[in-house]
Length: 403
Image (tube, rainbow, N blue to C red):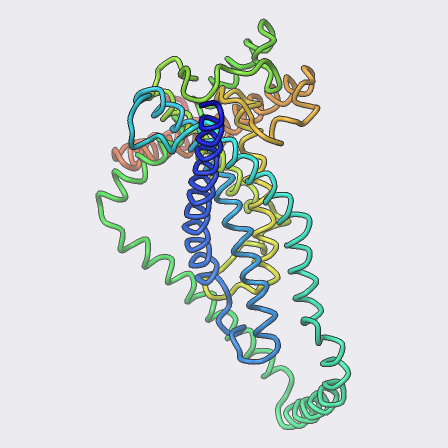
């Protein structure tokens, strides 16, 4: 009997491993397909040629797609774990969700950590240098094409010289300036037409509603961080590297149950989106933003690395700020600084202060202006402003007019 029990236990373990591997493969396959369509949407179409460069671009494309899929998996890691915990808590003995267990969640965290390091330190550097060196035959191509390139450049130089001899330089420069100005006018016209096509309910309802929603999410984030700061001051278990929780499916990690878990997931996605938008809003990365059908493979590799770094830091950032109480699993919870009280407290204080200043100085004024426009109160505000300016005009003799 003991031998049969041991065999059945081993069979059950084997079937569990196969099931978990199959689920992980299917999830990653879905993310890979979505990532492939996203990258091909932004990839420059002129790079698609049938030669040795095409093979190099195709390999770099596959590696970039793999990295973007890993980034998407890292973003969905914490929300998937939170919602799985609530589902297991609500339906503990349901036959159809027996595949959703703690072993699968731990396996996903370990795979996300492994593949993130693999992409960041191995695949993406290889893709970049492989692309820049034009593949394995890069040296051979450079030696063969050198004479041909010199010949082509010589022909171009002679053609330009003949054009300069036939036309004055001022006319050429004026034509170039006019073409550039015409292109700018067309771009501005396209943006204005796009704004004009927006319906009245989009301008008066959707845009202000989105602004108010962002305001609410930012305010809730600051409030949760403030509560986390108080918990850090009075409770050691509030540290990201504190005592372990009850485990997956044993207790709800939110006071409000499923509603609180849904709110945590929304805030986690909000943090990720705000991080990406803030990253591309920096002046140094202004030209780094991908453009539809006009992004080189080098820029795609750089964007994939940037998104990978932001997505890998998302679970640690969410737990450190107290957005969620879900324990960091795998290598995500093994950082030594997560147990340093002063570093964690300083990070929370910095986030709360900077976000509050941004909320007061920029975001609140933008929401107020949008609400005034939606309600038609901006005209009243302008009339009051003009009236105040008229009363403040000096009189002929240099004194201010009295009301």
